[in-house]
Image 1 (spheres, rainbow, N blue to C red):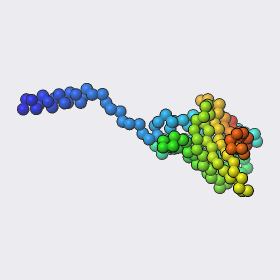
Image 2: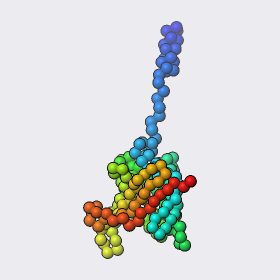
Image 3: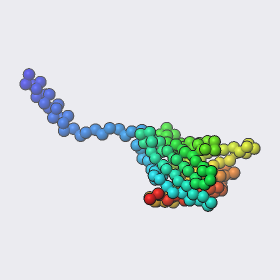
Length: 169
């Protein structure tokens, strides 16, 4: 009986002094899943001929980046996107919808010092081209965003819309 007691006491002592095991990280807690954190918050937007607001938040247990975009004006342009990091593909995936019936889907990730999401598209004549969004010059208070198009399979890009972001105070 004494041997059983000392064996049990030793087991308790070992268990009590063993280092605590931390739980494994959640599915959306990898460093890659935090790559869009620079975009989180409320932003005042400015571009040639317009202004607006963009509110970016983490949703669904931190696994989704949700964007709520509003362009000011007489007939406001509104849209939203949801983005998530896909651990199987190693890429970000974003879906955009808006109040003009638009639907776009993008994939991408970090490229040098910019976040780049792109997609293939086809116009009404059947001509294929590429589209991309590029986030650059990222600081805690500002960033630049560009909407670009390539008609030569990515050899050159034309900026169609450039937006300056400033964090709302």
